[in-house]
Image (cartoon, rainbow, N blue to C red; front, side, top):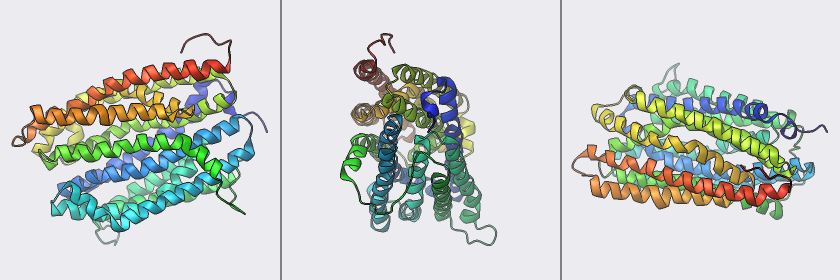
Length: 462
């Protein structure tokens, strides 16, 4: 078998080749996330608030599946870098097994836990009913998302990123087309309201998962997916979770942050939680391409670590940081200069406009540092040090951001004045400053500890 391109192609060309299809597909993903909310906002502000509050559970589902996929991806790429194709096959089939087991837990939550979740946040009946309707469907039918994400990561691990662009793009386009049909009842369909947004989403995910399976079976020559005589292998699953567990915890911290941040914001007004939800939708236009860059970078770093090539690892990280920072600076400019236009797309009320303009401008200041921090976290995972990513994530979100938000709400906020919620937004740039300092320290540490040891002749610094 000829040499994999991750070991021979010039780094800049390789990073672009690996990342660009995923960046494009994730931009499409971001588009359909926003389109969901744009349509839901036309149903009612309660419906938009419900979808915003449901985000913490959706993020938790994504965290468990994506975190597991990080472990699958990193281990599989290392086996491929070491030319151990039999080991890579074992990782792939055991990885698919564990993500399906994970799906069962969210199926049970969708059946029995959604109403209790919304009652923990609010007693507003309109918000609760809309939220339960939306989140139950998303959770019960999350098998499509589970298989789509995992099968796409298998393609990414072997450099087949063009196919992931097709699967993600197709799923997103189907979602966008079906949204207005199901939500408002076009083409003879009944008007389903917020439930229609959920149904459109799962249709897109299931079709994308089917296509991703086809590509793995027919186009992915470096992995053979076969469950004939399959038995779960504890040693393989254990190695997957050595990387995956810190990643799962790290990503799940975002759900904890979202839940408690909404609790803080609801002290002032539910409009603040709606603004917070809109922010998360809009910021995905800038974060998603960086995550796409990450997905292209991780297998390159992991492959060349397995191939013991420190020079290519360093070049990959440096170039990825430059691209990530450039993307986030563009995002900062958009948020600073066009907050009013962004909020108008979501049918913003006067109160939502007043709170939202300040929120977008203040929170986006954290974009100055976010690009570097995201790339650093993925380097830690690719090199098998997911615990470093965990340290940074917990420190940023639970040790700094949430306490800062709570203190700012207590010291500068006034529950009788909804507009005083603006003080809370400053917790985001405060936390990101801490994050960039800790990330830089740990990145230097891991390069000195792991990358230098691959080649004693390598003496230049990262």
